[in-house]
Length: 292
Image (cartoon, rainbow, N blue to C red; front, top):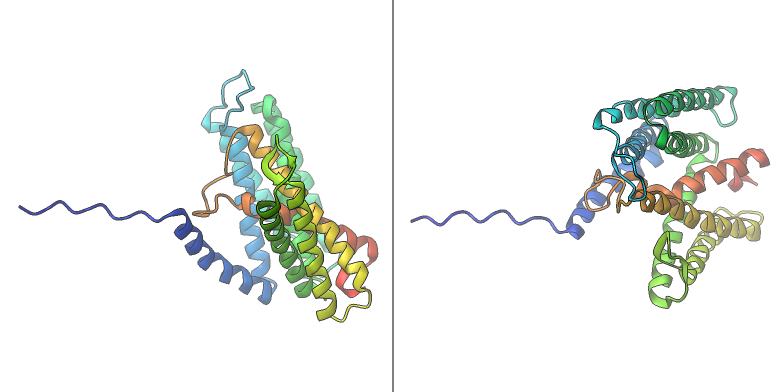
């Protein structure tokens, strides 16, 4: 008698992470190097995914402290509107030069999306309207910032610097935090984060700034190193903000859209904060930080 076939072995979480990285990393690197329109399209796709994750969590997950039932699944449908508004706003700056008046259309579209989402959420689910409204700037402004920065004359170097800085901050924070340990940074929000890990993140970001300054023959090495260190601090702050969001709704990941890694928001939380900060600095200074 033939033996029943054994069920196929499932991939481990590590295997899933490796496979996901093997697909996403080459695509992301290629988009960064190629620039517009490929970078714009990739950012738009990620922005739409972030909007879907945010609205999905807010609309379907019940916070243990709430007394009212979770909204009916049908109320999630308008979350697609938020995703579309994000993608539209991002694409509004497609091929727009850094600082051009044309990129103002993106902010107009974001504002329009904010108004529409506010009206709908206050009508459908007043209890969580604040979360729906807050999600619009959270998932729209950073993608627009990334596109505007990439369109600058020093855009490629700026994006590479930002991504390297975020990776170094995450890695430095993890390694130092696990090795040194010590007092917790924000135990109620992220139990695993420590003050030593925060120091490691800042140091890792500062190191990237220092190396970038030398590679680009930057005229003011100290300034770029200090700015990078501050951005490393903001990167950790962005991570804590997203952790607070997930803890409020009692979820580990914002979605499972990236096998082994969770959601898009889980992977880019620190990048969102850094991108906005770099854009603000660049606009106030009249040009890219790397061109000073």
